[in-house]
Image 1 (cartoon, rainbow, N blue to C red):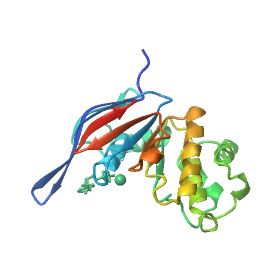
Image 2: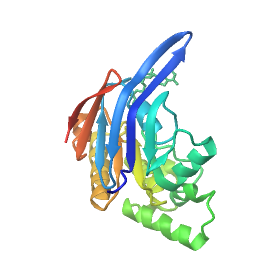
Image 3: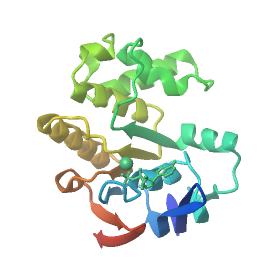
Image 4: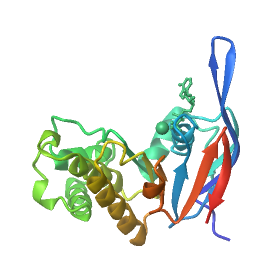
Length: 227
Ligand SMILES: Nc1ncnc2c1ncn2[C@@H]1O[C@H](COP(=O)(O)OP(=O)(O)O)[C@@H](O)[C@H]1O
Ligand SMILES: [Mg+2]
């Protein structure tokens, strides 16, 4: 049987604030295979980003078990987790997180900075990723010269460039107008059709409708799975 890309069971996360324990996630089970496009919905504050950060090894659960690509990552060191992230995961955030002083090509090149790959190969991967998001004509532009939708496409190219096993997107349309949102979701859909595995967090049902399956988080639990 094929190993699931993500096997998370009974994931719980609590925050401690001045002797008060705030339960955010209270027993999340999540399995994901390669090639899936999963939407994660829920109201603001329901724990969507917390869950995505745990899946993305940016944060650790308080309890539960989590295997990423067959590896038990809960006992990995911070260095091991950052190695896993740079090999397997591509992140896309609401605020794009581009470096304003760098060009489009230089921003997309960033994930290769600490990897020993020869420059020609890096350049080829960077150009391929930029072409996949339709920005080949803009490689020498800086973020300030781009629209919000274009900036998010650069961020998606940066996430794609390493050839990640999984793309994690947290409210990727949250800062975009409705037309740009549609374009970004069509891009995610196209990438999915070309084989990318995607988990996309949104509070917007219309955005979530581009995913193949949707889970909804409420009070720290998954309350609905529509498949
Ligand atoms: N570092 C933190 N310390 C304390 N509470 C936090 C922290 N991060 C998130 N929370 C709380 O956890 C809950 C879920 O947050 P979050 O995962 O960001 O929700 P969502 O992404 O669904 O809006 C919120 O009540 C938030 O205030
Ligand atoms: Mg959030």
